[in-house]
Length: 72
Image 1: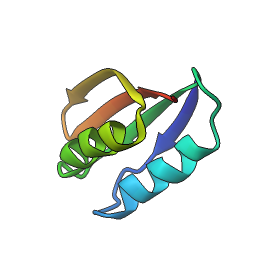
Image 2: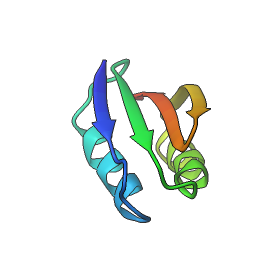
Image 3: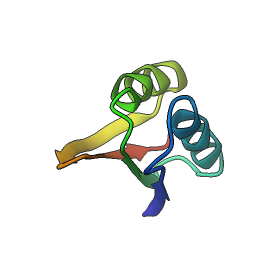
Image 4: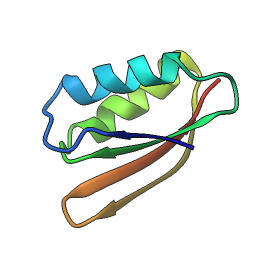
């Protein structure tokens, strides 16, 4: 599983970096994203709808948001 830590970054940087990392993956590969910007939650949902990726899991721990995406 690949990992992307966007902690401390504000919109739009987390979603821009997510898009770049996802473009490097082949179908079925997974990316774990760590974010601290709450707006990333909505951005991520829109992103996966537009690009056909799959949200495998999401959770929150203190001030961090975690997302596992699977590349389409």
